[in-house]
Structures are given as structure tokens and as C-alpha cells.
Amino acid sequence: MNTSAPIIWWVRRELRLSDNQVLQACIETGQPIIPVFILDEVFETYGAAPLWRFGLGAEVFAKSLASVDSRLIFRRGKALDVLQDIIAETGATAVRWGRAYDPDQIERDTNVKGALAETGIDAKSVSAHLIFEPWSVETKTGDFYKVYSPFWRAVKDRPVSDLIAAPRKLRAPELWPSSESPKDWKLDKRMKRGAAIVQPHICVGEEAALHRLDAFVETRIDAYKAERDFPAIPATSKLSENLAWGEISARTLWHRGMQASLGGAKGAEHFVKEVVWREFAYHLMWHTPHILSGNWREGWDAFPWNDDGESEFATAWKQGRTGIRFVDAAMREMYVTGHMHNRARMIVASYLTKHLMTHWRVGLKWFEDCLIDWDPASNAMGWQWAAGSGPDAAPYFRVFNPVTQLEKFDADEAYQNAWIAEGQLMPTETALSYFKAVPKSWNMSANQTYPNPIVTAETGRKRALEAYEARSF
Image (tube, helix red, strand yellow):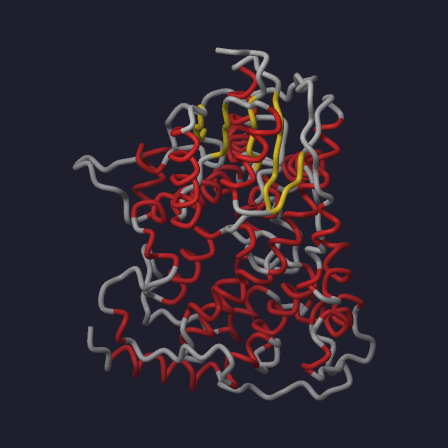
């Protein structure tokens, strides 16, 4: 191997130096490394909030690379074209990237790998996004798991290799290719005025993610299982934001969680189970990619959901004006922070798909546009789980009552008051900020009267169950 010719590290969802298997694979070649991020044909399809959040993460990561005498090259265009241009500019002989598992990225990567191989370029993907490769977890009959609990039992005692330390210095090429400025891409444009509102609520970069993990393990992981369902209590790690963009590795969360469990932290194993729930989502997406766009369970295509994302019900749901306080508080939390509490995600999804009889794809697309921690596998499985059409699903006849759920998990009304301004004499700043973030065309104001429920908990449940009983599966 020519160790003077550079290797291209095609940077995607692994914005970190520590425990980065792709970076390690590049280092092991002994070649100079050129890290490159491409705003390519797949990234261009991302929703407003995730693409903006990734751009911020990439800019912070560029500073991390500078600290080890490297740099991040930014380019925009079709992935194969950009890689071929940089190869021609630099004489690079190899390319490495983090393995992807969704159909769009697999198709892109397959085409890139084949085209580069034809020209003698050593092009390979490396596992960097998951703890367990989807094909490595099988039932005794060699099939893939379709239910989470046995999946967890199959992996919980598996050895996971030690974490990889961050390098102190990367070997630089003799010639750096030119780079675009990500600021010129204006990735905040689709966020409109919402970007300034969401900005204070984000936690960007590897260093911030590791500090966030430390704080969680030191102060909250013990009570995690007991308190995680209460949306007003800061009981969760919120690391989904950093995990989504690879600012921290899933293996890091696994090891820290397991160490805390061995140390006696009561909530630690449940935290690790949530990390493995994400692994299960990727397991299913890889084996059954139709989960991203179609009903996972057979027979659900005939179910009478309304798939009009602009209907009166869907619009009220998106705007946090359903009159159901748990739903509205959660939708507003997402619009202001780019995040939504996990219990709230189940409630808003159940209400949309069951009480409002609106297709889960409407909700999936809205989350894809609004969540800074958007993840294709977790988003799809979460929506289909709530709707009843997916794997490991909540049975359709199990309809969450959003009113009693709020009474149970927000008895002191702290969560709803944090996000719903109407009717409060002195609304919180978070509740008021919602009206600064939403499009002006929505014509919303904190002075408006809070609406009555568009569909009550009782009426919605009755209608949902009648539709389920009349189904033609």
C-alpha cells in the first residue's frame, strides 16, 4: 500500500474523535487522512430541524479536527461526483465511511463503492453507528427478531469491545483540497424564525455530549427508571440528540450504563435497554426496510386512516391546538426545543392515529421535519408501535387516554404550564416562545382562548375501537 497517498474519510453521522471505528480504520492504514463531509443527495432530503442541527454539529466537529492538526472539508453535490473530484485533486487511493442501514443510503453507498472500485479505489464501509450489526443477531432458527424482549435477552450478555481513545494528532496530506463554507449553505433557512428559538435548547458537539453523559450518570441514572415517564422532571439523558449525529457512540452509552449497573444504580439497566431499543429499530429497518414508508404488519393497508396531512385534525395537531393539553404541550415543546419527551411522543402519536384517525405517516413526516434528534429507524418504529401497525406494537385496542395520562404523569401541571400559555396570568417564557417560533401564517397568539378538544378522549377512543372492530384484515 502507498502510505504517502491520502485516504478520504467520508464523514457522515459520526461527528466524534473518540470511539470512532471509521477514523480508526483510516489511522490503521498509515495514510494521510482527509476528512470530508458532503451535503449530498441523501442529506438534501432531510427535514428542516435535523439538517440544521447536523450542520451545527459538523461546524463544531471541524474545530475538533483542527485540535488534532486536521480539518474538515465541506462540499455540496452528488456524493460520487464529489468523491471523484477530491480523488482527482489529491491522488487519494482509498475511501472509508460509516456503514448505513436505510435503503436510500444503502443505494447511494452501493453505487459509490462500485464506481470507485472500478477505478481502483479501495472503498469500504465500517461499522460505527451500532453496537450489534443487524445480521449478527439471530433467533435459534436463523431468523431475525420481531419482538424486542427476546432481542434484548439475546444481546444483553454479549461482550462489547473496549472503547477507542481519541487520537492526539492525525496525519495530514501534503495538499488539502478546497472547502466550501457551510455558512454559505444557509441550512437554517428552512427553519425560518424557529432557528433562533431552538438554538438555546441544543447541546452540540462531542465534548458537550460527554459532559451531558457524565452529568446523567452522576446525578440521574439511579432514578431513571422511576422518573423517566414524568415529562416535567429532568430525568432522562437527552443524549438522543447527540447519538443521532454520532457526537457520542452507542458503545459509549452501553459501557457507561453497564458500569453504572454494576455499581448499583437502579435505573442503569433500563437506560441500557433504551439504547438497545434503538439497536432493535435498526435491526428491523435493515431486515424489513418497508417499515419506513408502509405498514409493517400485513392487512393494515386497508385500515381507514385519513392520510391528508393538511386536514383540519392534522393541522390542529401540528399547531398544538387540539384542546388536549398533554398533546398540545408536547407538540409545542418539540417546536421550541426540537425535542419531545418520550412519554409525550407515545401520547401524541396515539392521539393522532387513534383519536384523530390520521395516518401515522403524517406524524412521521412532521417529526422528521421538527426533531433535532431525528433518526429514521427509531422514528418509524416509534410511530408504527403507537399506531398498532408495527412490530412489537401496542395493540390497536390499547388507546392511551391523554387526559388520565396527564393526570398521572403531570399531577402538578408543571409540564403543561411550561408549554401552554393561553389562560395563564403570567405564562412561562418557554410557553411564550412558542408563538415566536411558529410561522406567522398560523396567526397564533398567547392571548387567544385555549380551544375545546377537537375530539375528546372518550369520543376518540370509541371511534377508534369501532374502526378496529370493523377492519377488513
